[in-house]
Length: 417
Image 1 (tube, one colour):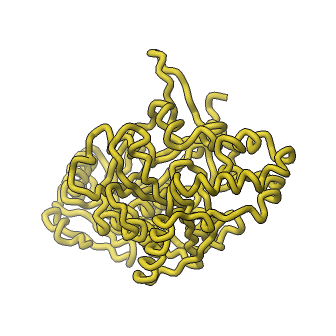
Image 2 (cartoon, rainbow, N blue to C red):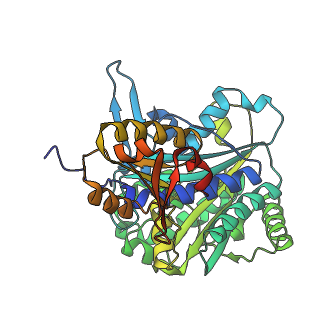
Image 3 (cartoon, rainbow, N blue to C red):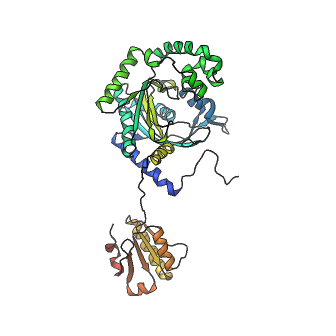
């Protein structure tokens, strides 16, 4: 039916949107503290961008992208992740010509066609940061520190940072040969998707979610054992930087991430609050992505984090998100003159930064007081023709139930916030 929401999407109603606003506000404030600046990119991009950056052997490109031809015959895709569009904007706008590093953050909807489940929707919302122009592993440590600080400020405990190095194209070539030799005896037992990846990108097989494939890759060679000297040094630097910042970590050689553009650093932050599938945040380094889409060789590192999944973690952890009561004053009116005066008073209050409301559906006086209760108004002002003739209004403090008559001229001095 046209009146039903599409499968895999979700309305964020006013009873829940304050939670989103809270999370986004904390994220923005922290990004400002770390000197990251907001960047906004289009909802859709040319499909080729994601094929070249995310990788044509990933689940995203093979199974999950919402792609379509527009009226001009251009093939476009609703963005399935946030990094590639930021890299495209960085390259197209020649931001690489500015003083580096360039540090950006974004809050954006993303789209992937997959089976909807708890915390995973076809339209989801992603927070993320990207740093360009810094090859030093201090950039990686800073990105990880921001992610950890953000989750800590939200009150999420029992977090574990897991890090890995997935090497560079040079050392990955040796690893590729060793991995294919390991996988070859069980080739026929792998799913069709993994068979297709065997020649094109065997590392993607390690990321397959099929229980059969997961079992078949147990004991596979580890990328850490094939790192070149440069990648080994970088990984050691990362660990030293995290130690210097007193950020505990666990080396997890199983982290490969689901996107082809990663090089060297790969990391995940896991919460035990939501069980085995507890990854809250993931990211890593992508030193060749800018070059891959046509820009100059520029190192990059960043992370992405799903808001829906984050809110589930907070709920599971019993974290209470403060709900701001937004109504300061309810103006209850009687009669036409009372209504006219009440409208002007409400408008003046709002100009002064006071959240004021007036009944616009025609309730009687008793109903207007009930409405004030529902709005959690701090004060109620009653104005009618009789009050205007006397030059007074009735002011009630809804928290103490104290009620008194005051002159019209004294209203603003009596209301304190």
